[in-house]
Image (cartoon, rainbow, N blue to C red; front, side, top):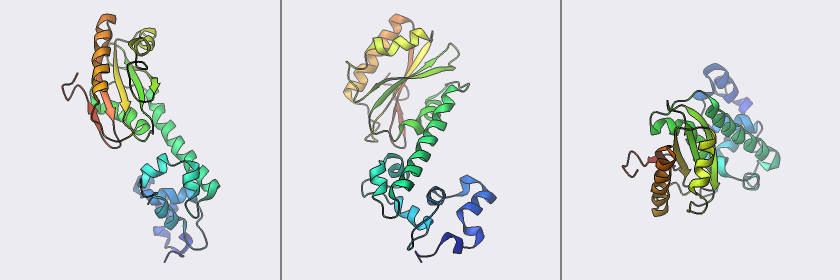
Length: 230
């Protein structure tokens, strides 16, 4: 069964033909990955090879593994090699860049769900903690999104001066704090809470309101405002 090539499948079952007929959203993760891989091996079709890639390395699996795996890790999958690993990583990065480009669109933030739509796909699989601010005008329209720090949050790297400097420069009326937890657990740490309260107080002095602090995990988020922490 595994030696069956994609060209041996009925036309209506082939990933390329299915995409042409039904659109990319109709394809499974394995089918989309198979289109990137293009060719399988003598023993496996590209589709079977894609299914095997999605099994991961025992720790992570599925799209999470594909998004986070290094070139070396992907290359170790039998049948992938460096060339196919490069193609996969290029596609992952392109997807991230497409997602992040929407930050420049005319976006209004009215709820934590809007923040999720804006940044979650970009931040959910990061292997380090990234702390960002979303800068808003008086109508809660996004002015810009700024990286403040990379690494575990602490008061030395997330200092009010560093957080509010770009907000002042862009004449922001308000900001939303955002960071990710690579562990996938969105529960705020004591330091997360302390830093947030410190920044809220600093914002009051500067006249820039801190509207919320959002923590992203792998598949969900936590809003300080919704949880009444803020």
